[in-house]
Image 1: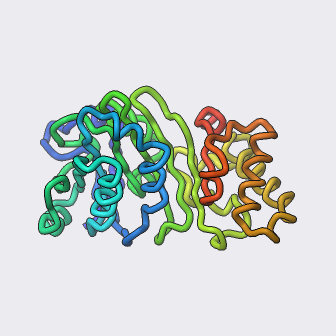
Image 2: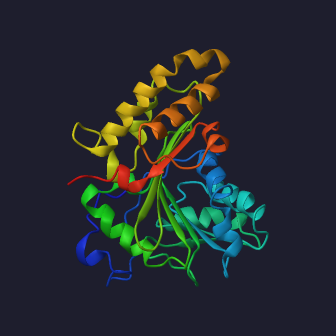
Image 3: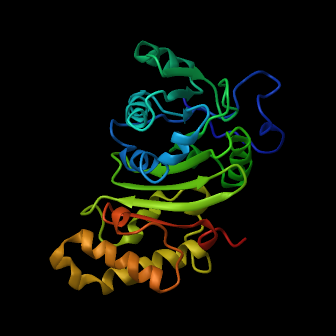
Length: 278
């Protein structure tokens, strides 16, 4: 049963509540196999060094949903990077955890919990997808701080959102101190303009896509560059997207990575370039 959105800011964001309940609310839990493939590809790609260097290769899939498919996929994908990885799937709904227990194996386990992350050790990666979007925007900063405080040195917290089958995906990456970047990843053919991804922005930004905010300026700049790169469409949408990314960088946007990532329909920019202005 899904809870009515309960505020979790203030004294609630301190660890476990005095009642002993996990920190957070039961969410809708909708999920689909392969839905997180784009963010997993990023974690196993540009961010793989974090897992390789970790003293303890502990990873948390926070709020994996009604079925554990995406947690299993995360474990399998990261095991290719670090064979001794330990992935802990965490869900606030006990019945979802009970349903997942038959899929446990060495390196993969499931636990009841919330943003307090009830695991032994400090995770090097925490992935929370389609979780914070069901909370109040005012609660996001407190939730971020709580999870950031649990990260291992060099750890990363991923707060992301995607559509039902993972064609349009965005995520914020945070280390223990601050947000680092915003990434967007899209399937070619799933959009008319790049700004179509705005409907899947993380909670911290989705209500900020209005004139005067930096994220709105980025969306407008992406559309402009995409349209100006229309002649490259004859070579395929990958070339057109790469042209858009190059144009954004030349216009002064702090675009990260290079053609190897861009060709996947991926774009990452520094967080400071899109952070809310108020």
